[in-house]
Amino acid sequence: MHIQIDKTSEVDIQPFRVLFLQELNRQFICNKCHQYGWADVYLITINGIRVGYSAVWGTDRREDRDTIFEFYVLPLYRKFTNTLFPKLCSVTKATYIECQSNDALLAAMLYEYAHSINAEAILFEDYASTDLRASDGVFRQRTSDDIPEGDQSPYVLELNGAIVASGGLMLNYNLPFADIYMQVKEPFRRQGLGSFMVQELKKVAYLMGRVPAARCNITNQISKATLQKAGLQTCGFRLKGVLKNE
Image (cartoon, rainbow, N blue to C red; front, side):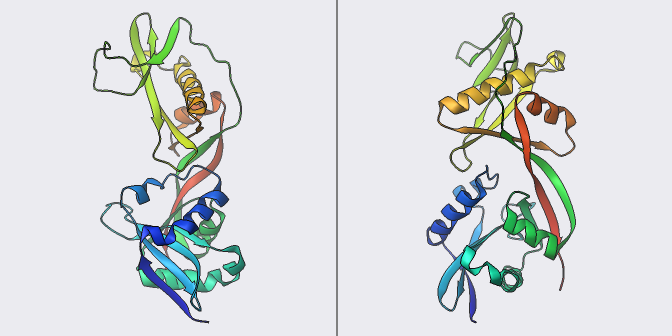
């Protein structure tokens, strides 16, 4: 069996990326690495047959290429995974693996070939509609009449004539997903306004033809509770590990 792993172009591996994202069927938080040119990609062939690809980027500096964050092999050839992956590590000279726990193939490689594994973020998906209220609060789009305060998020929550929270959707993820972000000003926190903002941003996403998703730091229990209250649930974790020297 002749295995070849060669650096290639984004165009060359695009059909495999379509299959990868379809199989994942979740928001892929590293999708923008391809859009912005932050990754090198590798084509995997067996006996001249294209069977998959991988993508590598820099875990701390974008210009580095030390971290495998995508690894896809056609199901018919996954019986060769444990032959392909060590060769990939050798070719790319990667030091780390970063993956989502809901990416079953790369997560399996992480647990088998890496150590010092840590969860860095919690990933969320929508699962329930909510009917939260913000007494006297008005959720609306930001206008040119609003006083700039260093935050230009496109949606705001106005309470008694003052903007108390803001947020929006990041659309540089794989379709059809949209990543929710929001912030509540300090004097107005712990009043349920954050969850209300998330609820309303979910509606905006659906009206745009997008599926809302979100993430937060693994240690941020307040953000986790805020997202859960708005009808989001944990669907995975962002994991990182150091490749073993073998």
